[in-house]
Image (tube, rainbow, N blue to C red; front, side):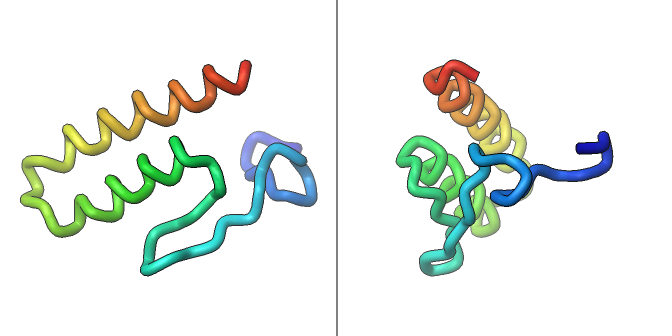
Length: 70
């Protein structure tokens, strides 16, 4: 895989297909799905609150990866 390519279910077995439920991506991982729901919900929040949402998303996704031993 080159630096410009992105992992897909075909090239990386860890990458699962993403489905959508009410406009929110659903991965099947509860922690990741909660983070994604927060990010989608940020669209309805004032712009100045987006930084906090993205910081929480980064922390939540990092924790999800760490819990998988990645």
